[in-house]
Length: 80
Image (cartoon, rainbow, N blue to C red):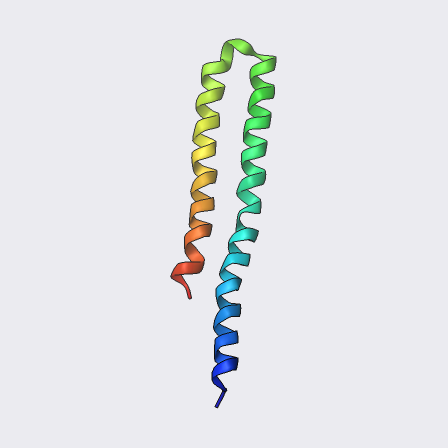
């Protein structure tokens, strides 16, 4: 049987693993958002008359990528 100190240390490590998992899960959406807005600005600079369409698609892409970030935030808490 494990001592209470070992059990407390195990709980602390498993709690920190959720934070590490979210940190790793936030890398992908961060890169995705950077690509979406960076390439969107380039598209608008090349074709200013298509600004409305490009901006609409930028917002849709941002919402989808941000949903992935929120899912990555919730998953470590759901699957303890």
